[in-house]
Image (tube, rainbow, N blue to C red):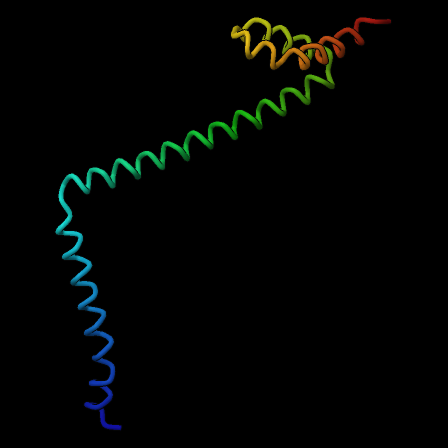
Length: 114
């Protein structure tokens, strides 16, 4: 095939792609400032949600490690139980950790027995 024919064959998709890009750009330009603000606020809300989920995962991991180590070591059990009794002040939360405090006290008491 001649070079000019090949050039015409390849030009078709390029023209369509350029037209699509131009329309996409014009659509973005047509958005109002209020729309741009709303989109940015929605993105910020999604990022904050992701950050909160990451923080929650980190707390779960740290709590799990602290509890499992405290249940194996009487000194750590005593320290964790004391910390929880001192810092957990809401009645709802205190009820939630009652069983854990009992387990920690049992571990600490076993070490005190001869």
